[in-house]
Length: 146
Image (cartoon, rainbow, N blue to C red; front, side, top):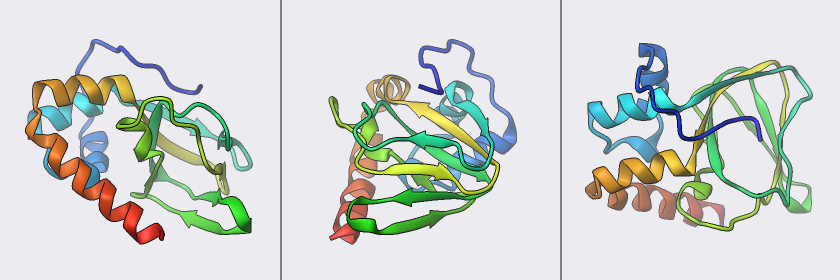
């Protein structure tokens, strides 16, 4: 896996905080919680063609694209292109034992933030009211897929 969890330092650059603030899933996080999440997110840089996730892999976190574009290759041959500010793998934050359902490949060089489920779980334990807002966003995204 190309990211780690359990980082104890909670410092974050303003660019990381703003990248996460733009993600609807985190819209209800307080500034403090958003800063802590940005502090434990791992920045990942990969070349064009690199496979970020493969269908069938264990899903233990999500990714937020900061620069570049990625291609999501869904079952049935459907392809979705993602750009800066877009994200994928969000269900892994709330569902244990989930496996990836798509392959995601960097179309261009990509810089993204990887966020581990364990880090989000810690934040939700500290701010349980945020969980409802996150679930609303997840439910809306699932409904849009159908």
